[in-house]
Length: 369
Image (cartoon, rainbow, N blue to C red; front, side):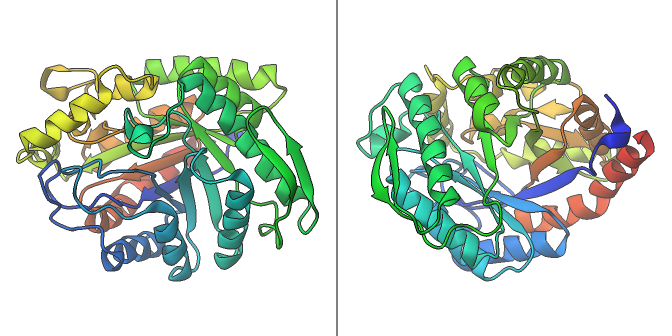
């Protein structure tokens, strides 16, 4: 890979809509996801220089007991956009719960409210049993078919603001739907995740960025090769992002102790809830994240203990600032240009990562170029 033509690595932070704290997997969050707290996270990330923030989508708490408070994604993102000025928002959305015509209006409105600081992460797979909570039943294949037409219909509406749009898909039908005004500029970028054939085919067709959960470097490289093939088949250029947690301390021993401490007070009820959500899942990436490991050690630097109490991404890079930066550079060398990172608690760790890790990565990337 020609590193001289690579952009500077982007770093994004995370909005903890399930709650936050120094311990996770407990019945209740030490820091519930109140608007005042999430506002602190966003303002800290913005002041620390992060490019964007991922706000996930859930139908029940996915980090503490499932009956605990959860900040609804779209409402929260809109409110947080209004109290920030520079940082972007990568908002996760699940097709199938809001009409694509209405969603296109909602997204255009948020794009205008935020001054164009909106991107969209389409979640096609979903957490095991989550769709059923709200009375929606569909297969893995059906969800991806819907996701494709969801994206295409939104694009059609945004391409002709103020004009009636018809869209006659197999799943989505629009009859004279209109969006006015359209989104700011070129509109949101589309991020898609997943590791299944359906996911990679959809990304190859429509994604601006394929977003991957962290795996060992060789497994990530293999997934990227499959993705590049899918992009090439559709005549498109791939772009890649990586989602991971970071546990950074001044010494390696302190970092591993912090990892163990993070889940040291996890409740059995929470562990059982997360285990049930993984059992039999069709989500390839989620199953990989939760694979049992001795002491949760995936590799020398990767630890997946978080997966025992958290849905979706459950693996962290653990080490000193230099070790963590070195591990991130191994993925940058593969061709990953954007890193969506997080750490507990999110306010304090945003500052630590921005101060101690990101400058090392950027310096190393500049040296490669």
